[in-house]
Image (cartoon, rainbow, N blue to C red; front, side, top):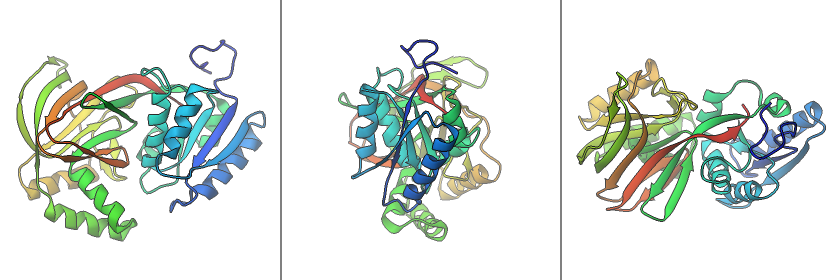
Length: 316
């Protein structure tokens, strides 16, 4: 068992568990939170388990940040990737910038559960009871000089956030999602950014330095996980390997984009270049997907994506 940073070697990493859930979740968050609480009380009766419903958008972020700055329980997000993003973002904000201030975890209760699906080792109740803390990488996003956000799985530009926004507006569910994806695919236009720096490794392990210039893409994904969107296999990366993968699809027309999407779902995209830092400047206002959440990047703004290795303290 790994002790929490700053604790005595024999101290447990947490004695209290907060189960954070949205009582209005369409994924059955409240029921799953109560089931997990029951299982935890049976497996680890010494743990203090508390159910914490969220009251508004962004509330999970505030709960996790407050916990990270004070008594440092295990914070479990009973949600999809978007809800877990709030918890990870809050825990990182309440930490020292290099590691979460508290242990966090996620159990599936949402539309997309990529992080839990890819990183899962055992039923979460068993992992929580064992208290074996592991450390995964986190993506840090800096927008301009004043906004910092964190992501546990991926940061995407292009077709990915466009489809995500449309699904939020027009409803979720397999049939609706397929219809929405097809409609947005036909409407989609490429985007352009100015690449300012790339620091990572090519296929042969040779370091790659700075380069400048405008690039036009249909999709650009910085991935900490090997899979996303329930079906797509992006790369051979691992969330604890000290680097992220850059999955880029230069603009070559809708048919080429469609073929790439089908290949990702059918057999995976295979090896992708890896990096630890990527910086670019927006030319126009752009939507960006941060795990399951979509935000807007202002025009003419410098954006930096940096890997924070081993920053996410978790059980899985």
